[in-house]
Image (cartoon, rainbow, N blue to C red; front, side, top):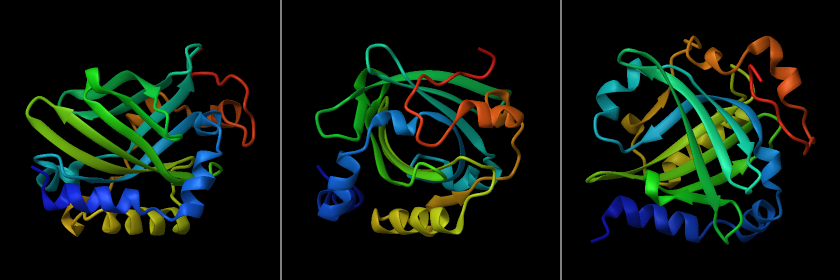
Length: 202
C-alpha cells in the first residue's frame, strides 16, 4: 500500500516540468562523471533524524564502465572509520534513471544540475525490510553555491521531506579526501570533457 510520502514523491516526479524533463533527457551521462563532494542530504532512513547532526561530508567519484554502467566509488564516515564502497548501476530506458535492484538501488535519478558546480540526485533504496528514499546535493567543491542549496531545499520540500529529515553535512572532509585528493581535482574533471575520467590513485 502506497503511503503519503511515496505518493508525494511519485506525483512530484511525474509532474516534473516538461521542459526540465526534456532537457535532462538530452544530456549525456558522461557529463556526470568525475569527483563530487556530497554536502547535504534529505533522507527517510530510520535513525537519520537522530544521527543527522553527526553526519560528515561524503564523496563520490562517478565513472562509466565499458558496459555503459554507472560506477559510483563512495567514501563516508562510519562507526569505525571511513567506509569506501563501489556500486554499479544500469541505465533504464527513461534517460537519466539508473538502478541495480540486486543491491537495493531501485532508482538513481538526476533531478537537476548544471554539471559545472552541482547535481541534485534522488535515490529510492530498499535494504531488507526497510524501503526509503534520499535526495543528495553533489558539489564539485567543498562549498556549495547558493543556487545549489536553493535547489536542494526546493526539491526536498517538493518531495515531501520534513525539515528535520534534511541536513547540511558537517564540514569534516577527512573521509571524502580519501578518494578526492583536492590538489588533483583539476586533473580529474574538466567541464565539457567527455573523455575517460581518471580515478584518484590510478
